[in-house]
Image 1 (tube, rainbow, N blue to C red):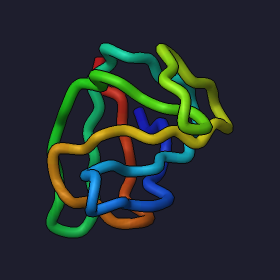
Image 2 (image 1 turned 120 degrees about the vertical axis):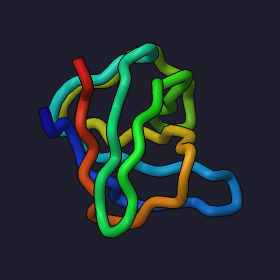
Image 3 (image 1 turned 90 degrees about the horizontal axis):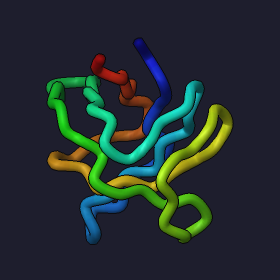
Length: 80
């Protein structure tokens, strides 16, 4: 299920900004796909307005650490 899209990537900290279409919480597993990139990871922590949060809702733009380099427009999926 697609839950969001990468809106920015910050290489110096290995983090991505993700604009959410559906809710997400710490502990959820996600998959990021785009270009040659396709990987899965668990959400260990996330930030909303530079504050650590445990969950976020549709419409929020969150920051998460990512295991690989991503680009704007890559799709984010939640894995059940």
